[in-house]
Length: 234
Image (cartoon, rainbow, N blue to C red):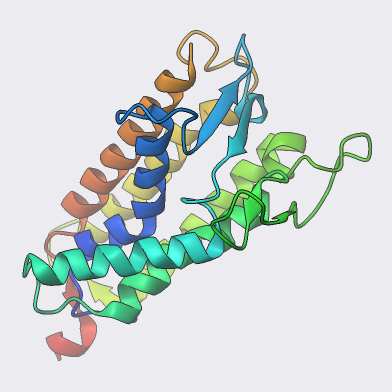
């Protein structure tokens, strides 16, 4: 997205890609005390791996139309606050709605097209467990789910490094190493038993997801702070 919309600040695109996840975190923590909660998940204990997280209700944050609406609201929030004159609606909307399509690759049978509790649930796009066809790739074959994430991450990093120059010494190398490290940091949740002592409840899961997103954003922004679009460097 940054390679396509070079004038849009990277931090805006990073938030746009995860704004639906931020909404998901808030709705699951339910700080407003809705009863029943607008969205909720269930963590099976002891927590072994990502397949023990069941997203029982997420129609607002993780429906296709819901994601688009969240992107629109986020865009107008940026505009009203005059955060950046380079903000583009299409960039923010595509980044926000793209989250849903990437989730569809690996999610269980828990995604919707419309932000309605009565809307039909779709997915998984591929079923690898004949005994439980509602399991997505990450739950049925967690290491394959991790591999898909890593491959998509590598493709994104490749496109970014092809379109931007790193004037700092070893800047490009450090950026690539950073992307590799971020992927390795996400590996434990795909390996059974590695997060058992860490995730103790639904609130813990929401907190860890937020910490993971924040850490990744800080690393990416830091490692790309001096990059220059190749077109503007000629």
